[in-house]
Length: 460
Image (cartoon, rainbow, N blue to C red):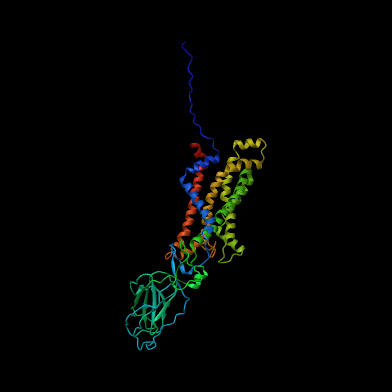
């Protein structure tokens, strides 16, 4: 028998469904697609690790001065020669040569046989030369390049005031660099336009006693031994302090002000603006006119007044007055933004429905209004942090914020400007950290703005 009943068939119906995501889950998915924001987030995490855990990994005292490595550029670990304790320099005077010439001449010869006495080290460079007939003294110069003429001899180091005194010791800020020493004869007052040049490269040297005091050597170390000095990967400043350690210490000060000040004034602005926007009416008008008044107050003037009120004198760090000034004068912008959001949200239908169901004011505020303003609050906070960091850097740069010896990125920039031509790394590193941090927070704030924008989400 033939079965004419319909054959059974299964039809697989493909359903394309999109998983249900909450507001914050959707915002996070959108944020991850923003490459610049994610890179900025990684940078901020790295800076936080650098600030919090860096001092535990790089255990170098930021206040320790290494006078043998003053203003050193970033370099590999250096070797130093151990030397004995310094012995006072004895002048070289030729007794049978006249101290003053019998008559002043129009021209004399340049000193001959300009030479070193002992080995040139960073502890001291001792020079000697043959006396010049007709000279009443000698002037000694030092340059870091070969002099191109009489007017290019470099730094004047000192003078001898007798024609028979033919030696000089240089101990002025010596580094293991190549120097060009010039000796110019004088008649006791004016210089003759002749000179001799000697090229000298001092050996980096440290005394045995100093090396033992810094725990660089054992008790068996002797003069002539070669040792390794402390490693400074980012160089040192003008006092020989480790730049990496000071940048870590300065980050704690700069980020403390840059994060806690915005946190405080944003929270106050949320409460102030939310209160004004929710209750509205005449109370809203009065509160916002006071916010307008606070906006008009000069920040620098109040910073000075707070420093006087707290008894912070010249040369003292004004961290607390700066923090208070930022908190008391920076909240109106947040208050305005939150007020505008609350004014929109309180008119929504679900707020009215919750109110009709018996929801009290505190329930409406904490359950509906504040959660729906979190996007604006988060964006405001990410933009407020770099503004506070830049303000701290600016005030410290002009000497009104954090001042030495307390390090901050702004005060380090202030110190680095003085030596920016000769030792640019002292300015570049703190300025670079300020720039990177401010840029990272700004880009992250842009990413949050796009991720939390409901209009962009509705178009997708």
